[in-house]
Image (tube, rainbow, N blue to C red; front, side, top):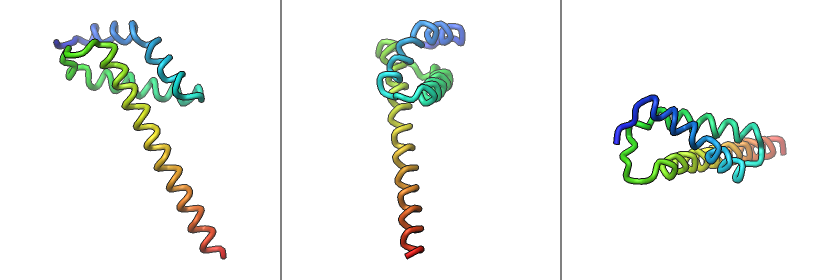
Length: 95
């Protein structure tokens, strides 16, 4: 099933509340919720041509949101680990 730009816009409008609620249930910082929502919307727009119709559209959209959330968590964890390494190097160098 191919979706047109207009169709994608309508699908996003119909599901934006559910996607936002998903993020609000998993992220407690409102700014981070907005960032995740924007990234998800961009990813939906970039990848809508790959939607095959094998699953319900809301399942597909929430799967993209989940991937954004998991990717954000991975990036956050990586950044935190890098900060810890830098801090350890500084501590070891100062001793």
